[in-house]
Structures are given as C-alpha cells and as structure tokens.
Image (cartoon, rainbow, N blue to C red; front, side, top):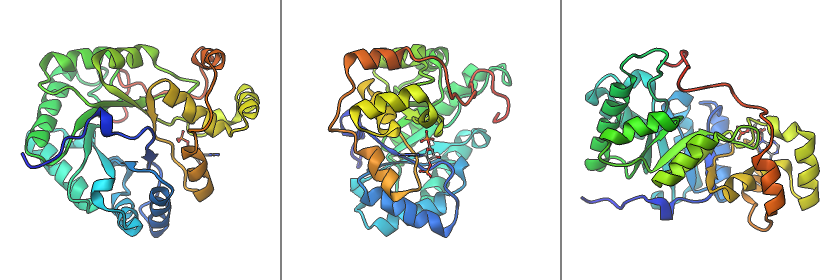
Length: 281
Ligand code: A2P
C-alpha cells in the first residue's frame, strides 16, 4: 500500500468545523484564514453543500497537502450500494479538489426509527468504508453520531475499528455513555458544536467561570473538551474568533471546575438523536 496511515497519534487536539459555511466566494477567505490561524484538521461533509468553496479556501492557504488532515462524510442518500459509496467518496475528493481524504466518516447511522434492518445497513456501509481504506482512497475511516449500542453492533462485524466517532458534545450535553464506551474501545471522540452552536456562550455560570480564568467562554468550552480527551471542532467565520478558539493551551481548568462542568445540567442540545431521528433517513 502506498499511503501513510492516519492514527490517533497524528490527529491534532482541535479541528475546524465547516458546517454552515456557504458555497460562495466568502468561504474561500474564511477557510484560508482558519488554516493560516493554525487549524490543521478541516472537518467537511458532502451534506454541508459547500465543498467546492471550502476546497478553494484550502488551496488559497497554499499549505502543503500533507500538512493538513481533511475529513469528509458519507451522506445517507449515498449509502445504497458499495458502488454508490465509492462514488460518493470520489465526489467529495473531486469537489474539494484535495487528491485524497485523510478521514472519511459515516455521517449518520441508519436510524432504528426508520430502518428495521439498521444493523445490517450500518454493517454494509462500514464494509464499504473499509474497502475505501484498503484501496487507499482514504487514510482512515470513522463514524459520526453513533451511540453506544450502535457502535457495539458495528464492532461485531467490523474488520477495522473506527478511528473516530464524531458526536455532539459540549458542556451542556456530554453523552457520557457513548464517550466512555469509545474510550474503552480506543475510539477517539470528536465534538461537533463544542460551543453548543453558540448557545453555551450565553450561560451565566460559564461566563463567571471563564472570567476567573481570564478566557472567553468559547475557550472554556473548547478547553473542556480537550481536558476530557475529546477533539473539539469549533466553527467560526471570524478571524479573531478563530484565533481565540485555538488559543487554549496556556490555561488549565482545575479539577474542581472540571467536576462542576462534567455535572452541568442539560442545556443547549440540538435534540438530534441518531436512534430516533427520521428527518435524514
Ligand atoms: P461566528 O462564526 O460568527 O464566530 P459551534 O462551533 O458550537 O457550532 O458554534 C458556532 C457558533 O459560535 C457560531 O455562531 C460562531 O459564530 C460562534 N462562535 C464561534 N467562536 C466564537 C467565539 N470565540 N466567540 C463568540 N462566538 C463564537
């Protein structure tokens, strides 16, 4: 095989999320800035409908391709067959114009609420991702939004373990059962919406705690993920906020405050549950 492996050791501690960026000229500058501001893991998805301009932003940064980890996701509508999955992966690479993907993820598991044969669908989809890995089109494979029991089923037939499981994770919604299971199985957890899509930034208790550390609430939220061993993927269009979100390595949340945050009441969750969801399947 003529490709390097992507593994836990070479994934950065923070990535940049591209959900909600538009497939328009303005995205070029935003993504370019993110890379110049130091983000090396760029999280993308076909479903974000912006790959062309995200790819142009990556190119505009002039960074060498092998200095970046570009992650893509397989959308539900493309799961039909091995062929459709291979084509979807190729299309993502083509749209991003990035040569290959470092990481390719199943965006959502088949929902129990819609598919009686969800276990089989997930197993077959994973088998196709394993094939993409074997032929070297992608350097590593993983999943998103899988809960503990969905992962348990997947691991019964998987030849390769997912490198990552990307889930909604922030102070107000921690999905402890899934996170603990991933840790036990050696699957890295990535956090989408680590700021609760911005909702965490308005929580008074968090504002007070952030003030104590002389950091922004966003930095507190991002550092919270890192100290829990989770890779946050914050999104920001703004140059200064992009810098702020990655500047989280010269303070540490105390053990006592981590306890408070790890017991924080539910707030700001998206409500998207991959076992009951019907809208994407
Ligand atoms: P903007 O793009 O204008 O910066 P999440 O990553 O949890 O989905 O949150 C993304 C939201 O949080 C976006 O609305 C983004 O707005 C906002 N945001 C990201 N970083 C910061 C920050 N450092 N301070 C304030 N708002 C932020």
